[in-house]
Image (cartoon, rainbow, N blue to C red):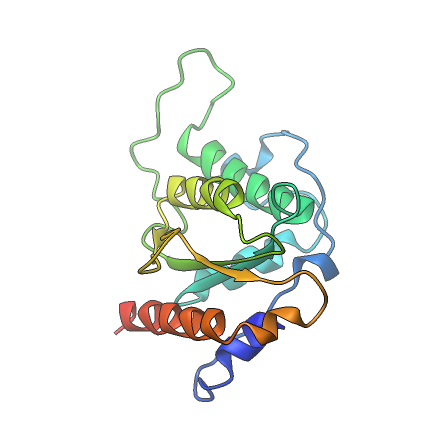
Length: 183
């Protein structure tokens, strides 16, 4: 709901909203077979990753529960594992060094974060998401006020985020920054 509302004024933009909660995302089984190709698990993960690869920028929007939603954490883990396996080919060997020919699949890909929280405290899941995504060499587009890593939106009940007009405008400003990166 939040992302749809934020993107309303950007009628000319071509975007797709992918809700992980509605997708089949399995847990990584650490098989390492993604070292030389896509993940071998048969779920929606590779389709989403392929869409991310061609996107000009990515918005990650998620609610804060105790940390972050488990499906979002699962998705981040799978992204991180693919990055790791490709960077450290042969990582199961003792003392494997990074592969110097490795080019991270999302290197320089701009992204921004929106986090919805009933309490307004979002630092823990933000640090976690930002750490993982920046670790994959993605480019974090930061907000201009605290907590800087993202726009925090207050909301607990369904639809409550749409009442936070300042938060929605902050998100729109951040998306304009994301869009400006591509021009």
